[in-house]
Image 1 (spheres, one colour):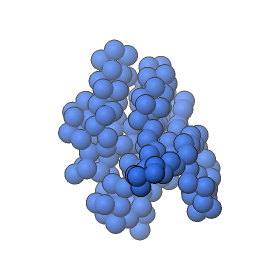
Image 2 (cartoon, one colour):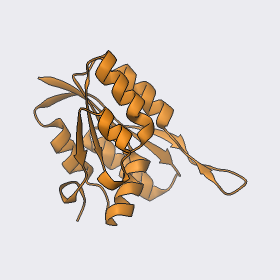
Image 3 (cartoon, helix red, strand yellow):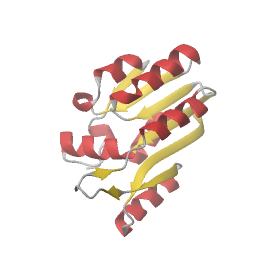
Length: 158
């Protein structure tokens, strides 16, 4: 059986599906599609914690599906800007867990992950599958992956 690691950039998925479709992502449908016939060795969803109840409910849903949820606090700067970025954490975990997996599934359209995809593919011979909103996913990431799956109706909540 194929061993798969799944890494989810929750903020990226939330904002890109909202922007492109005005709808929310269906994590259950994604889990079914990404894990079918595969052994999940690690599945992590990276999110920002604002501390509200609705967000905690969502995090519990992710855990019930099978994800480990890693949280960073939401930081509001004095100039009004906000910080809450998991790129380095996702990249480190991607190498850590992806190097021993047959497949790494990355749910993000962030072009910063093209280096992660290339490294896993070329150095560790891990197949990299990227899921993202096609018009909002970096071309460099699409080209770095072995396979790109555009998010469409099948992966969105009604």
